[in-house]
Length: 330
Image 1 (cartoon, rainbow, N blue to C red):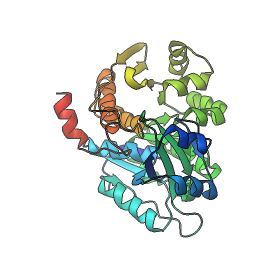
Image 2 (image 1 turned 45 degrees about the horizontal axis):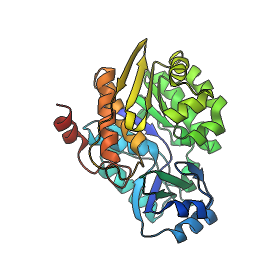
Image 3 (image 1 turned 180 degrees about the horizontal axis):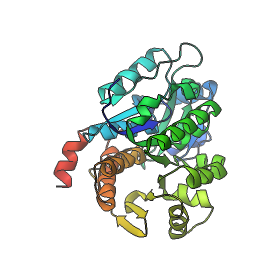
Image 4 (image 1 turned 45 degrees about the vertical axis):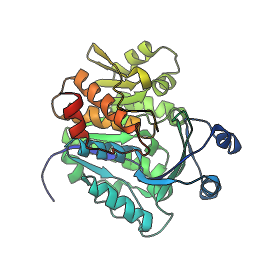
């Protein structure tokens, strides 16, 4: 085991994304809420997949996408998640390691298949996710390597992981180990529907363990059940060291210790697919944070990474983010 420091160790669901372009009628046919993430069982997943047109498969999962983004920027990252010892699990493991992310969690030898998310991309580039969690629900506290956590500057956790009860225990274990090691704990709220399911628990986490909070505007408003972004930022910043909120075409806002930065979006190309945009924003922001950038520059880099992500299909960078940042933010 190496003692090299890691900028970010992320914990989340290990999911293979299956992406297809469909129209709004497809959403209506399957009773899907545009822009949402819903959990589905194997039968429901099969029904959606059978009706999908030609699809693209890509290794995904929110926290893993963030780790891959950090690595693409030239940073160091590890990932903790669970796949099955099946073909998709092998592909997923290869893709993450090839992206430069340290991933050593042993695959499950029994139980459900590697997780998959069937993502519908409508003509407005919005993504609607239907996720079969599969083997990712088997992530357990024993899979959280204390030595890996101890090497992290930031331990980054996705709110989606709060759904499976055993994975929730792993989530708590990672937070406790991070605090023991003196690492910052970062949390992304992941999805407004996820917030609706676990609002009270998430609010409790902010007051207990979270140093850096990531959310989009809808998620943070839902968390505090108000319709005023300024008020939501004020509430969150009472307990979190740093709060950063993405606002789509309006860019992002960061609040920390009484200072606020509203940073405009940084589009790279045409809007194609919003899958992974928040994940790559977090990658840019966390890379900046762990490399001594000021908060405004962290947000600029986050916006740049999100802009690259939405310019193509798939949730991970299609080009070197380090090269892109050197060119665009010089």
